[in-house]
Amino acid sequence: MKAMSTTNKLRFVPALAVVAMCVLGASRAGAAPVHLVAQSPVSITNVAPGVVLVDFGRVAFGNLKLVPPASATNEIMVHFGEAFTQGRIERKPPGSVRYATTNAVLAGKPLVVAPAPDARNTEVVSDKHPPAILTPADWDVVLPFRWAEIEGWPGELLPGHIIRQAAFVATWDDDAAAFRCSDEMLNQIWELSRYSIKATTFAGVYVDGDRERIPYEADAYLNQLSHYYTDHDLQMARDTFDHLMQHGTWPSEWPPHMVFMAYADWMQTGDTNWLATRYGSLKSKLLLDRAGTDGLVQSSEAQIKRGDIVDWPAKERDGYVFTELNTVVNAFHLRTLEMMAELGRAIGRDQEAGAYSSRAAQVRSSFQQKFFDPVRGVHRDGATTDHASLHANLFPLAFGLVPETNRATVAAWLAGRGMRCSVYAAQYLMEGLFESGQGDAAIQLMTVPGDRSWRHMVESGTTITWEAWDQKYKPNQDWNHAWGAAPANLLPRYVLGARALEPGWQRALIQPNCGALTYASGKVPTPRGPIEIEWKRGATFALSLALPPNLPARVELPAFADAKQVLLNGQPVRARLDRDRWVLAEPVCGKARIEVR
Image: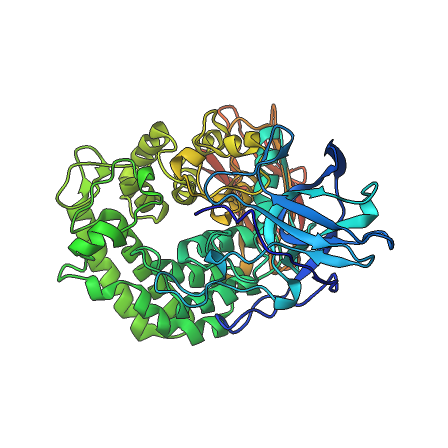
């Protein structure tokens, strides 16, 4: 994807209201409300004769509103940029990183300055992909940028002369979530990821950054998970789901993510009415038309060549060997069958749930028989290859498909191989490690030196997560991709340890993972109210917990070698030792201080 044209035509429009409700184009029926927020510069610097550099601190999707002096009547040139080099905006940034420029005529009154539209991300008719999501016409064009350079401004450019009109979902609450721990790099990773979710709400539905501005199923699911853990909003995930049911995309594993999205909504909200009206349509997302007599999904030559994606980009697949019976594709198929059975029971469709459950049992048996290597204790990439990639094991581990007796072995094997996957698959790798006794390794992988961790993104200076670990792994990548923001959900889910045990957060699980950390605290939004957690590890392990009313929690705390008892508010309580955790016998409610010593 080429950067935006550097020779755009003259553009200026009347000033618009700072807050505007989002009414998108004909490509979809509805959207979460989105508005424009006025943001002042962080700094204004003269960088060359007649050239002023304006820094807004972080990248956001937006444009500029200028308020020139009443006497100003000249033409100016404005440059917008995501990349910065040698003290100036990068004029030829790599891949899909944004740079644009336009001219504007000052006429002594406020005006909005924006570049010309990008043909790639405003297509509503295309034979290559579904329609782009359009932002409101009265906003004019918005693009991701942090810096602006202005040439020809009359006199001194003052903060009152320029604002960025940045687009975010109108319901966003910056105080909804929090995370802090003893590792400053993890704190920066959290903030990068949290802000990435906020910044990419600009379209009212989850889109693939700025290159095409269309929703993709896998992107949307990862975005949904992180949105739940950073804000109160539930509607954007639902709007994206409904859009994708009408405008699906091409990879084999992407349609099953629609079941994942429906399941995540149910666990977050407990809303069976919303689910019931969409349950039947999910059958088309299960890949049942490709199932053989043993229940396993089969891949044609065309699907092997393009449809079966495993990971993206293609170089991130750890040497995966594609065959007619693909382990990763079948892992998604099996997990969705199990989810459909559970969702069916939740809405009273017991007959359908039973059918899905029976089919899942058949597929699970075939899955282990065809793909699991009992000698090595790992899954192969397919039925006709001995190659065992990271992906053939991380997805089964995350989906609970690895035989119980082999979970620890597979988790240790994965932890030892490191981050041999993309930022997309890293979500599932981290989940599998955290849930299989390798939480320490998962935390280490987030901050490992090199170019395959979130530490690398932080140290690069980016303010929104990337589509790939580095430019060299995906030369056309966006620098504003929410599927790279997995720590926004991973850190509160697993380091703070707050997860829903029952739909609608009727019951919570509090299960912190420490790794090498000595301290962590934060706030997790739930539909019942925020959960506040603080834990410290020293000679003892102490957890302070504040739960919303009517939200009981099962509490599982780290067990150390010399720990002998658990205290609740200073009094001994019954707890059983389960491997490396103390599990309290009774649910915890309200405010509590729990100590392991």
